[in-house]
Length: 296
Image (cartoon, rainbow, N blue to C red; front, side, top):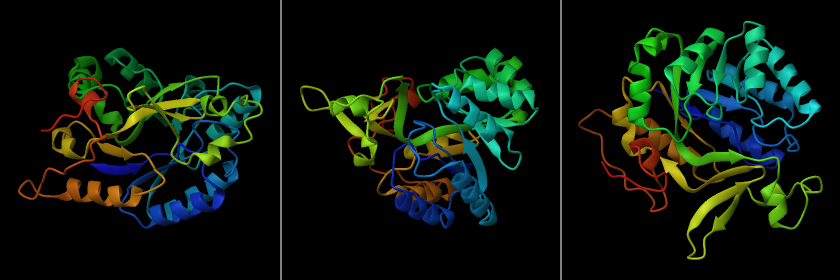
């Protein structure tokens, strides 16, 4: 099973982004996803910068995939998406159907991101026929659901043509909106946000009246309030999942990469249950409420 790092979902200063990626180049990950997936106004790194990083990661022995925006709202974003999809050096992760269309028209292979609705064998096969070679499953779906989908005779015939990737660590992307909730939270409009997301490198927490963290605001993206963590569920993925994805955080990402790497490479006799922070959850994987934590 491969270890991957997803694109940085938050807005970090350029120097911090470059420092983070220097560390990732020396880490145990096998595949790196690069690109802005949330908001086109986040311009610390542009397309040329990501392509330069992609070259450096490839020279460091990493697989590289370029990730696209998840919600397209303007003609300029569609034009930029087309340019990203027309380059031929690196695989592209399509996070909306416009990218799927561009890539399939050029007969280029692509990865399907978790924001694209793929819930049944027919859709799975259709995407494979269009050129899907990697599939990051929707984050809210369970192990049992994934096993049933891949065991279906229609999907089973296409299974060897694509890898299956699961988000195993990070705050879950739950929804995208045309409105910027981070800007609204400081009484600014989206057009006059003044890049306020820079002030929240891990997103802005939303708490209920009893103080529970229910959501994380990240610009136009709404994330879970609790971090998803499947490090203790890796044993049940063998033979079903090909890659486990970690989403970057402002702190401790490298430590968790090492922890997942060690867990993946441990022998059955060495495998140990890891005590997780109380706020970490894994309910969706067990076909339960996402905010639940299941000990196995």
